[in-house]
Image (cartoon, rainbow, N blue to C red):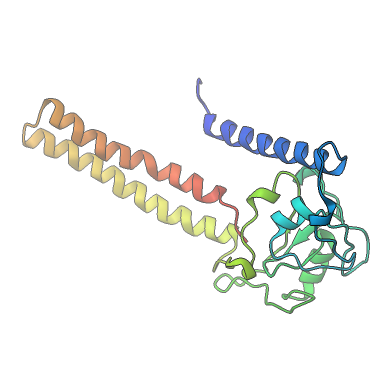
Amino acid sequence: MPGHNLRGRVEDESKVEMRRLVDIYLDAIVFKEVPIDDAGRIHYSKTECYFPDPVISFLIDLPRVVCMICREKLTMDRRVEEASSHNVSILPCGHVACYGCFETWLDTHQACPTCRTEMIYSQCRHTVLPLLITSDTICTLPKTLPMGGAIPPNCSKCEGRALRKRKIKMLILGAKGVYNARNRIRERKIEGEEAAMIMEIVEDQFRRIPLEFADTLQERRW
């Protein structure tokens, strides 16, 4: 069917383009294809583990750091699907470590191993998991707590379920709105441009509901 899943393809293509942009930039910086003044770069200790603004730190300063838990060198892979267990990951508090180490730690401790900030969603009570920092995710990471970000009440899965229920109710109400508009047009014998304008408004409102649902699910969040 022409146009089927076009929205998904456009979103996938935008992610691919973002990754390409970051990859080309990193290649240019790391391999010195463009002149960069190293004196303007912050040189972190290899044991540094606090990066409240990861986009600036990992794309400008390129820190070479080790995991604060296992002391293995942290990597930043290009694709989240290909990330190793030693890929750098970040918690809402801004602390970083291996994704695998954070996962193991959070299985038994629902808090950051460094600052002890609680890693629990206040409503659903699930554990807040770290986010991988890769070429295709770094530009869409949510803000850390020190940068004004927030941990939402529910995890993505629970929020998705709750949001789906709300959107189903909105779809039902939207459908009733379309039915009512048609009935009003028929009962009041409204014709021509006026009838078309009324239907365009109510039908457009109905069309927006599933699109808003999809947009909300695509948002990067903790």
